[in-house]
Length: 113
Length: 245
Image (cartoon, rainbow over the protein chains, first blue to last red):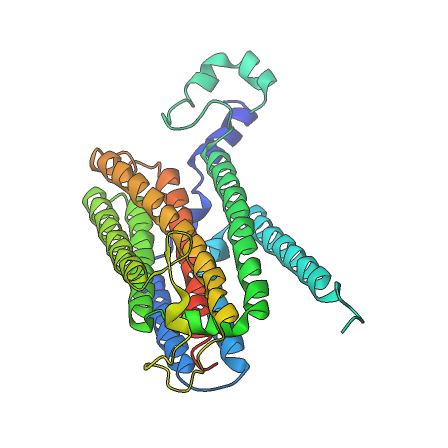
């Protein structure tokens, strides 16, 4: 048996990254519980008058929930570097686009008020 | 394995063609899986840009017509919105369990979790339909059935709210336009998702995803969780943050 064939056999039978880290019901259950908890917190917080901070708190909780979903339900925590980099680069680009749009928006009438 | 190796060892190459779901242009299953996950994430990133544009519009118009957005937001039911959030989180959990069942090669469990996801998706859309119906009855649908009359009077549910001036009351249409655009696009994604789920259940019943090939179920799971994330942001922005303004 040649070297290449042997290497190929290892590649074919090597467990995939998911089989190495199959995310089990326990992790899903914990994340599910946390998401429900944060939903209850965000609804409860909306009934407390925090002036300008209602929006900040609500969005911060939404971001925490989104990160939980991305990392665990969407397996990014257990994924390859390629996937992690893709997701991170995408969100970075998104933030850049929003920031530049908002920068343009707030500076249109700069000095005119 | 490069082409030279294939050319010089054709019979050895042939014996590695054992996976019926390994496409010819991939070196091995790991590479095939990695490629499809990468492609799925690129698609989801375009979706993030799409919904992000809507969120950006919402942010800017809320800043412009703040009293109208507050008054419009007060017309939504937090109870229905919170219920729908819980339903969608449950459906994300059932979808995650479906992916797990696929990995563990449990055919009946996979079909069961996928069916549960369909049911929860249907419940979400049903509650959304109830909300849309209420909007229609209150004449809050811009372009089709809109009346600003309700906003120029005192709202008994929010006694601290001042009635809006007639021009600002008209601007509640901007709020409801964005409400329907955002929840409507989200609901469309849900409808597409449920449709794909029905196909997945039929194929899963035949054992398509429990014999080692689960990439389709996994990538659909990514889509379903993404739709969940969009709602995680829609719920506070549309329903919650204006409650005390």
